[in-house]
Image (cartoon, rainbow, N blue to C red; front, side):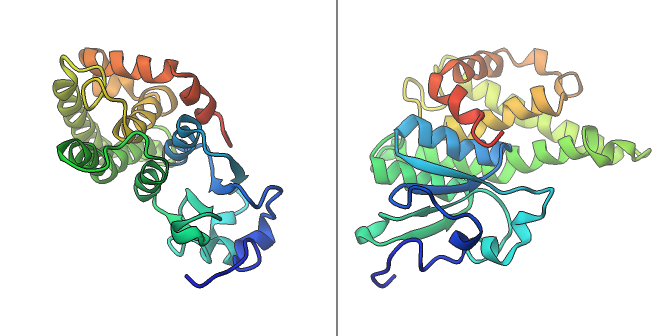
Length: 235
């Protein structure tokens, strides 16, 4: 990106004018994907300014938001001090977690096996746990709950239970997803587990009581001060 000045070069600033343009700008909402990034920002200590993207007002479909994320999903960020000191916009929560980890040198190994072990679990969440838990939430908690045919719901119940089993088996004997090291893999996965159980209230459907290791690590995750703060950003 050529040399530029934030926020003048970003159309999104017209709708959400920054009060602190020198800080990283977060455009998000208190959903599991949004919370992944706000938790990471709190954990790594980067100064940031949060802007609420109101789904009720269709903010995500506004030209200003689409100028940053053409896929009209939260979260998205603008880093005024991006690569080579130039402002940069970025969307997709997994990509943002990796970017922030690399920028700060925290919660993700710079190279080697541990880096790719963390990344595989981030991708597991992005491609599996997040979509499946979210679909279960739709069919159990949101408008889909009124559909009389429960086969769609049960499909996601079964897959969510399978994924919890994969997670539970992996966590046996480990403090976090990568053993003793707390990483972006934990920040990607456990906001979704929390939403599945406590927001979507699907614990009994998926047999959450059977997954002692998931329960243990979720409890430890939720007890972290930065997590408690990050979960409430734009709630």
